[in-house]
Length: 260
Image 1 (cartoon, rainbow, N blue to C red):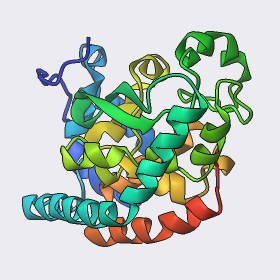
Image 2 (cartoon, rainbow, N blue to C red):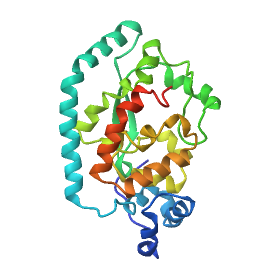
Image 3 (cartoon, helix red, strand yellow):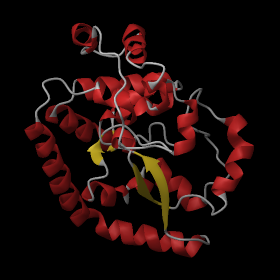
Image 4 (cartoon, one colour):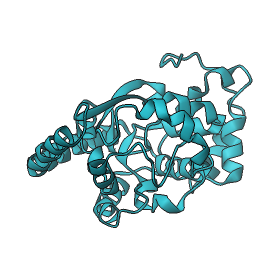
């Protein structure tokens, strides 16, 4: 069971002196440092590492501003796309059996659980069929990715290609469970493949888009590389960086980079 109330058991020796060298990115040595911050006892509660991974020059006012920006941009965006969302929902309802929305428990900030929403893009037995498809996983880490996933519906292929299936996550943003920009939230079974240092990506609110998506996710096959991008984003976080990623996202979506 994942808990959001943790008892620290981290060895902080040399953390302050070494952390300065970690601000420029995430390479192998930095990842080794993250893992060294976890004592054997703490390995049982690896979300503790998220309390070491804080943005540079952290100020509460910056996080508050990020939250206000998320809320304002979400309301503004919904006013333009509400008609599209209704149309997509009607097509899903007419073309396949099952609900319009797909709700799945995900792991967010500091290990907190929440239900993430999507337009349903798969048949209703998709979760039951996953086990038989795991050998076709195209990534070498915790995520599952398959180019021609047979569980995806016809309309599902289109809305996944252009990330339209992600739009209901704007509800999660309004609720404060997600941000517009941040690491993608995993499902619990993916944590079974995590190394301790991978938990650094839970030091920020999960996002609808991020460095991985705008950088061309189809070219990134290693989950380690995904985590390094997330870690670099968190450590060097700024409102300007969020705005740059948001600006790049429409082009990445229209290019359908990395969509399956």
